[in-house]
Amino acid sequence: MTHALEITDLRKSYGGVQALDGVSLTVPEGSFFGFLGPNGAGKTTFINILVGLVRKSGGEALVFGHDVEDDYRAARDAIGLAPQEFNVDRFFPIHEVLEHKAGYHGVPASEAEERAAEALQRVGIYDKRNTRFDWLSGGMKRRFMLARALVTDPDLLILDEPSAGVDVQLRRDLWELVTELNEQGTTILLTTHYIEEAERLCDEVAILDSGRIVTVATPAELKDRGLDRIVVTLREPLSVAPSVLSDDERVESIECEGNRLVVTARQGGLIAPTLVRELDRGGFEIVDMEIARTSLEEVFVELTNSGVDRPENQRDEGTAADDRDREEAPLVTDGGAAAQRGRSQ
Amino acid sequence: MSVVDRVAARTPLPTGFYTLTKREILRFVRRPKNTFAPAITNVLYFSVFGVVLGARVGEIIGVPYILFILPGLIVLGAISNAFENASFSIFHGRWNEYIHETLTSPLSYTQMVWAYILSSAFRGLLVGAIIAAIGGGIISYLYQPVPIEQPVYLLAFMLVIVLLFASLGVVGGLLATDFDDLTMMNQFILRPLVFFGAVFYSLEDLTPLLRDVSMLNPMVYMVNGVRYGFLGVAEVDPNLSLFVLAGATAVVASIDVWLFKRGYGLTD
Image 1 (cartoon, rainbow over the protein chains, first blue to last red):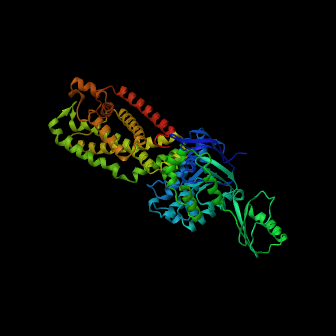
Image 2 (cartoon, one colour; image 1 turned 120 degrees about the vertical axis):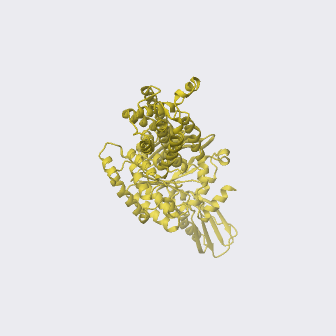
Image 3 (spheres, rainbow over the protein chains, first blue to last red; image 1 turned 45 degrees about the vertical axis):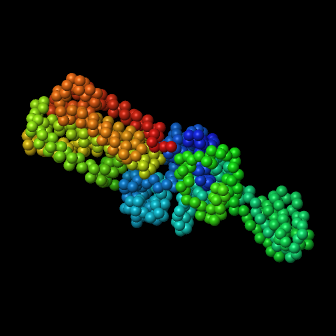
């Protein structure tokens, strides 16, 4: 079976700094794959190697079986990229920019006109077709970036932080559109800071930190790795924690706080019924129970904060890729912002 | 879809290559000010050097001075524009990063380079033709119709010099780190070479030493070749000039392709 991406030991160094440090990854054809990572993790460098904007220092990258250097034309033809930065031809009205882009991919002029119109209609800015890119609003510019990626009818659509700085409506439109494309068979590679976005859309996510893959898993699997918190409120206060769930390896801790019993464990939702049964058998009367499931965001922060063999210079020295990534929009959720603050402390 | 598109669709021209070439030509056709600005400059050249000063100079190699300088001014306008177009287009694309639209496409590096070269060479020819029309009109009105003694040579020399300078413009566009570099290349390299390239004087008027030094200037061969096309008089063997210039064009265009393949100035 041909995979959309087969990446083996991919490396990129800028001077003495490793932007990518042996990334190996497989993205199945037709999947919706998320690429998560903090600023400077190497996400944009990874994408730019695929499309030929960054030269790899080592390793191998295949796009639908085509090497990105030896067979670059076939590899690039398969990819539609909506980059984070606005790198659009400012000389021409946007419909012509799309026609040119389609033409570069071998689409004849008559068909390119039709495709440009369809792409603009699809992202909802057809009425702006004769406008130059500079005159579009911020949201329209973001929509246009998607239209440009779609006009070549790519097998692999790469979205680099597509919803950075966009409003709620546009984000939802975007989610709807990419979900539809994925259902029609297009493989999607999404890099994002928005954990909610990855959780909602992706079949599988890879977490990248300091140029290394920390883990690859489904969002559900990742959440299962995090610690949930079950808070049981009892009728009577406790002086010591009751002996419950003693054999369950998923349980990390059980603590008493007055009449509240706090259990910290993985897969809290699965543990809760057993906990209730054992408390009931022990004669404890339960008046309330609350399960706080771990969020993917918390797992993400935990994984990327662990400092997996991270050389000091990767934290302190800047690279071109780092600089680009640092310009990315900050996290929008409070938890995410807290995560960012946590990293900088 | 334009008529040109329809015609192109019937040819074996690769669509990607055709589209990029078209885009590059449309870029300057839609903004004609810069392309037609040399018309004004050259009216001034012809008026001052040809009409006012030319009357005092008299004839050089048997033709009125204004006719003598016509080939040189055509070369100056053509190569400046061929060079500027390629260097500006590539550098502007790099500066604003929209060259990524081309680089991330399945065009071969050779196709990318030749699209830039051909569109820029076309602009050089266009400007050369504008200058020829203006100069020819003035000379015909004041003196005599402008002869074209060797039309094949004229065409061959014009083609090869605009291709050569468009190819050099690609290198310039890749090497430049800011817009000042582009201005500098034109003002401090191209123009001095042209002005000391026997545009306004005959090599016969120079001392032997200066004549020998001038022969190191590639512009001498270009101006001489185009002048041979018009007047049928050459101070240097036109066949040798054409051969050397064609060879230089092939070498520089190959360097362009190599630089694109290597990603010089284009990729991190």
